[in-house]
Image (cartoon, rainbow, N blue to C red; front, side, top):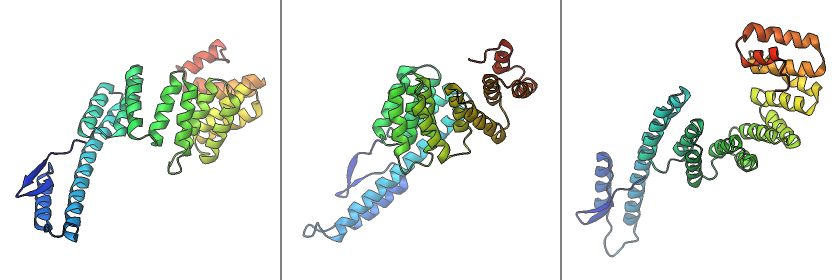
Length: 285
């Protein structure tokens, strides 16, 4: 944030707040409690310092509150696919509070979405300069790297996020590390990451789906079936989850199971790309 200039009021040096109420409080406390020249280390001096610190903390809190409102608007616009407006709101959040790492991270996500890869990376790096240990930012940057064929770099950030003992959702970066490892066909690492994610959050459809997909690719159709069936019981079956089940049944040579899942896919998702792939017989896509 930008701090206001220091001014002298009645020979009392204080930091003037941009908020009228804080100005009044700072002037009142600082000037009335100013210590004498004979005792600059007295409790009066400590009161001045404490009052100034409190005023600065209040100002910082107000600035962050205003920036957070803008960022929440940006997130809402992003979720509604209004990307230009989301970018503008995130820019305003940064103008209010240039130290707000989350705002830079969101800009990185949005810019990546619209294909501005170089600018997106600039924003992510600034976010990490401000908050290098932030797990959400490390996870988001890791996913950005993975999507841009920089899988090994991505894993560093996923693991940094997952190692944070205060992070409330460590399964999320572990899932992403598993998906990213699958992209480079490191199936042993992918299995390790996804199993760890599943153990942390067994109700996560992302972990369960990707374990089913992983075991399909590894040729372990028994385990693939276990996770696929678990997934379709956990959620209202989607085109993706049904297509996974169809592909597993096809590889197993189980025509009855394959037809059962295909019937659901046709009935619920007739216009989906998965049904189109089924009709083409593209079971390895």
